[in-house]
Structures are given as C-alpha cells and as structure tokens.
Image (cartoon, rainbow, N blue to C red):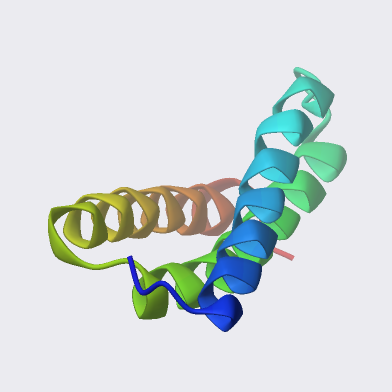
Length: 87
C-alpha cells in the first residue's frame, strides 16, 4: 500500500463506499425491477468511485486481486443493467 495521508484518507473513503454497497444488498426486493435497477445503478457508481483510489494506493498482489474483483463486479453489474434495466 502507498502509505501517505492522502491514500489513507482515500482508502478509508473507498472502504466506506464498499460498505455502503454491502449494506444496500438488503434493500433488494424480488420482483421490484425499478427499485433494484436504481440500487444497481448506485452500486456501479460507488464501485467506480472506490476503484480509483484502490488503483492508485494499493500495490503488489493485493492490487491485482482487489482490482480484478472490482472490475469483475462492475462488469457483472453493467451486464445486469443492460439486460434488465433498459430505460
């Protein structure tokens, strides 16, 4: 990890976004496409915001692993949005 005050602050904010995404999982309602699509849209926005400081501030094996997982999740959410949430 890049151990600077800026990275410490930015990674804390990124973790807050990831925690908000996890907390949002409980809000999904089976059959409520409008609500679920809105939640998915917010999740992808928050994941993109969290990804940038993680890319900049995490190094080594953790960088590849964390960013790979985030990129896969972002891709999954975008695929769901394209399939289920067309406006």
